Image (cartoon, rainbow, N blue to C red; front, side):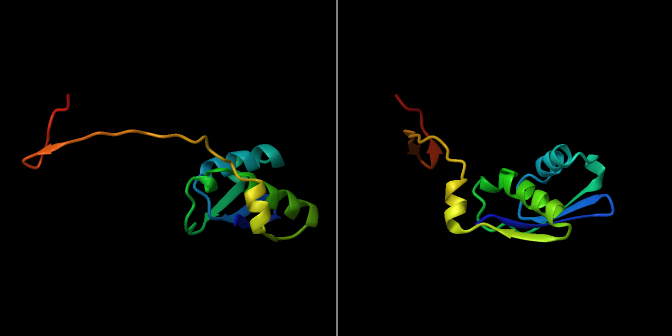
Length: 110
């Protein structure tokens, strides 16, 4: 499930997150929090199986907004239910691929 830690202090916003888009997260945090992007620090963590979901920045923004309201560092961890409710589903698709080898080399197809 999605999760990260955020801390706003001394005019900085620090976020520890398993993100696939640290630049996107930094820019969105700067916009939402009204800070200069240079005042945002992203500490990128190992993300495990991200499969593109950790490209989105919603969980990092949520953690930072809660940390600002709480006045201290916050560790946010979504439940599996929240994770599924807030996922970004991609459209289904199919693909048909044909190929052939002749003597170990790609052969032309009719």
